[in-house]
Each structure stands twice: as C-alpha cells, then as structure tokens.
Image (cartoon, rainbow, N blue to C red):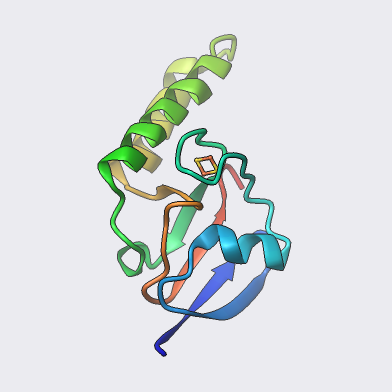
Length: 121
Ligand code: FES
C-alpha cells in the first residue's frame, strides 16, 4: 500500500500514513490542535492550513468549498470590531481563497507528502 508523510507543524510531528487517510484521522492521534465537530464537512470547525504539498491532497468538493466559504464569513464577522478590519479581510482572502491553502480536515485525504497546521497558527 502506498504511503505518504504528513507533518503537523503546530506539534512538530511527522507521521507516515496510507494514501487515502483523512487529515482528521491523523491530527487527533498526534495531538495537533486542528479542531473538529461534525466530521461531515458541515460545521467548518476543522479548517486547517496547508503549508506545503497542497497538490498532494484530495481536491476539495463543491460541498467542502461551500463550507469553507461560510467559515470565512464567520471569521470575518468575528472581526467586525477589529480596528484594521479592511486589512484583515484582505489578508484572509489573499492567504486562503486566492492562495488555496485552507481545507477541511474531515474532508481532505492524503495522496502525498504535505505539511499542515491549525488555522491561524
Ligand atoms: S468537523 Fe465539521 S466540517 Fe469538518
């Protein structure tokens, strides 16, 4: 069975897993601070950042993309009182939507080596 290496940057742990393993299955075991709730791609709480190897992960489904977009809206709403809201929104869009770095751990399968971290770490 093919294997891939995933590094969880927040806890500095690298593990070798079978191709097709979901990020959420690994993050729990290594103690990463990637959060989760529904495990079905609905709540958006498992958003994480891909630092390296984005193309070595499964492609996001339309359902995952919709949940990610709703997650971005929630984060921006939480920043409504931030003094520099405009620049925060620009940074969020640049780093996640445009850079395509953000995924849902419960929906993302590993196909090759990558480095991941909790959102905002
Ligand atoms: S745990 Fe709810 S979307 Fe992943």
